[in-house]
Image 1 (tube, rainbow, N blue to C red):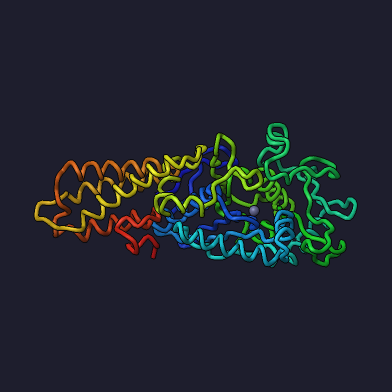
Image 2 (cartoon, rainbow, N blue to C red):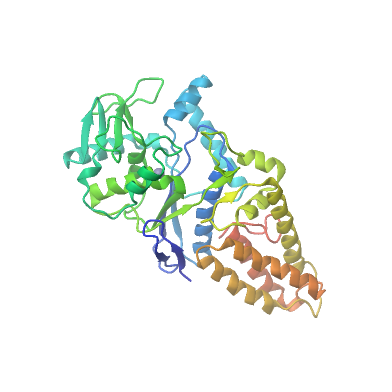
Length: 414
Ligand SMILES: [Zn+2]
């Protein structure tokens, strides 16, 4: 069943086929590694993990690239505060990020390129942009000239520039730029900030060219699916599209998917404002599967107001479902719970995922089954039907990344 979802760029329904030998090309914008990741980040990576798991469940491979932004001003500042070279700090935080993702069952990407390894490639791209007239110099920096892109297919910069003049990331305001839509491709820098030699002197690249360099080097553009958190639409994905249009006449991706924010006290969870619960803090109070389950209780398109109370409730529901469903295989009577009910539920399960990754509906399906199993008073699936039931339950667990049949029960896809 193809995955049908609302494309964030067109705001129309789009679909991605689950058949075909060619893997689905998916690039997810990864973290800027300077501090421990929070639950808002996890929600984004979970969305793409579920997307990937859905495709794998349907038999289509996914080529998943997710970068690590390992140099940036915030990293430099934090490294200075800790008296470390920036690369040491980013290396430490990147390892910690990978450890946390594994803990909550996020499948590792096929590659996690580091921005710092692609600076040569970025310099080449900037030179090409300059040659084609899409860049201008100002006080030692190189800017992308948005006015030179006549193609109008893109996210609307105007919407963002008027609605939220300076996004939380603070990376949009470029006082020397000709136009608020323009952005830095290269700027001078001095140690201890990251520094590379370039045709424009010693300095460092801007943010948007980084992802374009890593994406274009690791997959054919336009890729099938590109995304991240909602705050990446502008300026980041807008800017990547401009670079792509300038160099290839095409958008960077055919489809865009973004996850809504996690909020606390109705404000976006963010490292820069300190309004956050780190993944580690959450895992101090709730098990990884409970946390995963909790984040799935809301559609990725809706804001999720983080509540430890609700997270605990979700953890209880998960434990109840897990006990009831794995219990079906624990014993085997002759007249047990009919496997047909699992088969019917399974159709609904995959249909709900195929329809805009409706995880709340999927969890409802599991919970209704749990209630039905309890009500039936049966001790388990009839002996001859164990095999069929195990297959269904293993499939669900693998697709959701939850050990439905207990730890090590195959929440990793084959
Ligand atoms: Zn990116």
